[in-house]
Image (cartoon, rainbow, N blue to C red):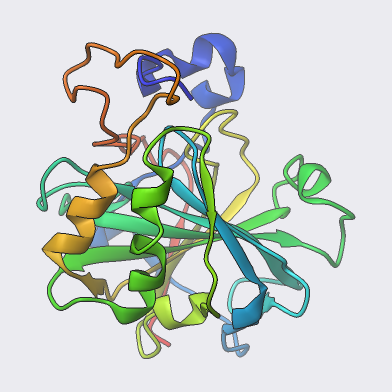
Length: 260
């Protein structure tokens, strides 16, 4: 996605971006219903199946081989496997998350993107259905250095420009990014980047993950243009900052809460 394609313009090319089940949203306590389920949300990932990290020009994205991974229980009726995970962040530590809680912003938000293998044969097919994709959202807050995240930040200087990729090179377990004892919020929504398909069951964890200021600074050193291109004269001088979509109306949807 080019730097100049701001979220407010997306609906011109991607009509679903103007839909009534869009993400992210502001999660307000007054709107919460209890999630009635006797199935605990569980996840399993294979650390050796984390492959490489790419600069998409909009964020960093880690590709995985989803074989052997599994997400089920909680609000999910089916089995989901991990497709990729990526991150959103701000130009400063007081903003960067896509979802907010009672208006509160966090320094960033990690998204683990899964698809429904019980009903569909590919991610592309799954993304056409309301139950096709499940995204786990984990807020980032500044604090101590995250050692598992270091395995990604160590590669980011090698992918300074859009389109560049680097092998992770060591086993990386995405499950270590998920707060174990945290409750979560869940609702029906969309992808937060074009085409903004309304295919996502969102699971947003309450407890943030701690990352260091230095790790966030490495994120902000990524550039939104290709090496052979000239630097765009934008407000961030070509660096990837504030790559989050603003919150959108909840409308008639319900947000359910699990205290897990």
